[in-house]
Image (cartoon, rainbow, N blue to C red; front, top):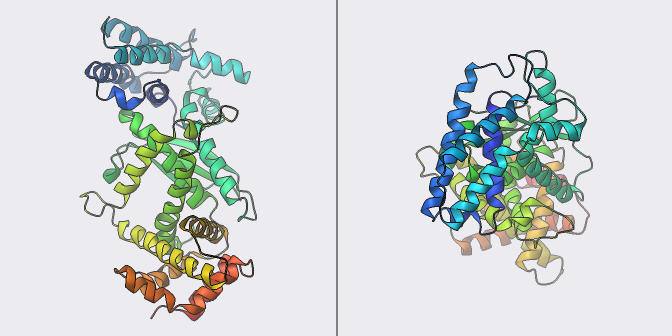
Length: 421
């Protein structure tokens, strides 16, 4: 199992835990960004973390018997330096931020983790490193802020797919160190889903440009993780198939939009103290960054936009066209006047069932191409006319609404009888 280890774990854990702590402050992170003293306190903390963690790459974690676990010892070093450097007075906002940083770096995180797990604390020596990696991956408190969000997103995806997938998908979280930020998104974190070595299992790998991770990267994690879980983890075909490039528009455009919509619904839920969920608790903060990153993802004018953006956009256009067909199918089957919410819910259900099916990468790509070629026209009036001419397609989708066809059957009907010209 791949995980961030010594020495990157020192800095990554501090930055993630500090971001999580700032989010929990009563006045909200946005207020900190407009307070000069708070911005200074935040920058000072980040500078000290970097100054302590940077030189660790050339040092052994535990050259002799460790009295204090090495990650914990470096946390304490940051704490000492920060206490010595921070101003004795500031604004109420900056004082709250400073206390939060002090609490984070003074926590005996490795000792507490070992006590909870009934194991020895990680020492990152040559003889213990392999076991330490396993400990981090299987519940280490040092990466708890990421794991907390991953478990929330995995649960969200599992709940969404429960009606549409015929199998459970065991999935684990791995982590690594990326060398640079993700270009046009301006983030220092990215995700990827891959087939695990054990058949039938998948891994969601999150990589960090550790030296630059901060709260906006943390706030972007639910969108990244929801995308991976909803678009890829429950995908019904081999992610490593040679022709996987043929379904890029569907998975990275269509299903990305679905994932974002599902996440947005959860961000808007009222908090429930009996069922704690960090995404719901701080939904407005997560939604703000999710919406910004989602919009940037499809920005073709950005100088660093990847070449695949055009395909992602094709996937979102096809989804919009399919939603139009779903509305006509609803009317065609006399199910009443379709409201936007009802059509959106049914379209989401079809999308999840389609993704979880055994449709090949080529079939997924062809379906997107057919929808775009026949129905994705610039004028809403022309689009409505084009949709109305697709009576066969409306019939097949109507069958799906009445549980008379599966999503994969509908897609194959489109390919067989409404092929691309």
